[in-house]
Length: 289
Image 1 (cartoon, rainbow, N blue to C red):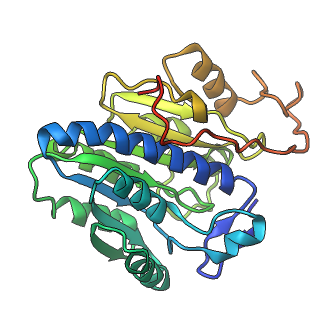
Image 2 (cartoon, helix red, strand yellow; image 1 turned 60 degrees about the vertical axis):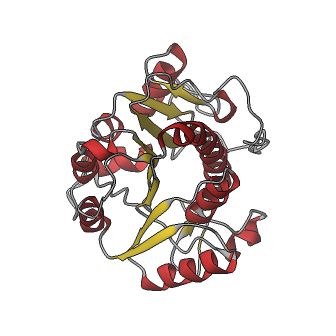
Image 3 (cartoon, rainbow, N blue to C red; image 1 turned 120 degrees about the vertical axis):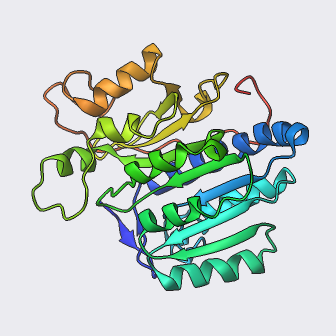
């Protein structure tokens, strides 16, 4: 469960540093790969954050973590590679969007930004009608809070557009929550099964990250149409077609059948130990590219 809630209503738990450090690594990798492509095609890079938040959370420092959220991390990594993206930041909290605007300006981050207040399903469909380029490179990021309200139908609809074929998808998923909501009649939103969340976006290649929390099992779902995409072993992100990720998927869908370290044979959970956040800097080019 969340350890705390920030001043703008965003939740923070022991899994947040694992997510943020993994996100920074992936954005650094994605930025470097796309930089090579953009140098040849001159296509714009589009970044869509469906749950952007304020981008700056000083409350994070109470837990010894950096104070930056996904939109700022994404811009930092993209700008580091000389990419000035087209950004669409979506959030239901007006204060969060105002803080994000000020933070982008204060840090002098370079982008063409639009801010969308309201339900991200509506925002995403409106964004799709605002696409002016014939082809984009880029990333859509979805990281909802506890109820795991992913706009899967809208994501799939947008990815069917020819302009978005080369735009990838990253979702941060608490798979235990998803499994609980699948059969909960109290859910007042459109509930998708874990299988639908993992495969229902329309992308051809899917990668899943090994969860660090044996209870809630937060994980990244990364989806792309790039045939040459390889595993990102530094952040334990593996293709669903490989043996390693088949074991991870088995654990996510049925923890008792193949328990990961920290989960006993009877399905009970051990107390989580210290997490290893020592991920090599994403600036270092390696075989993952």
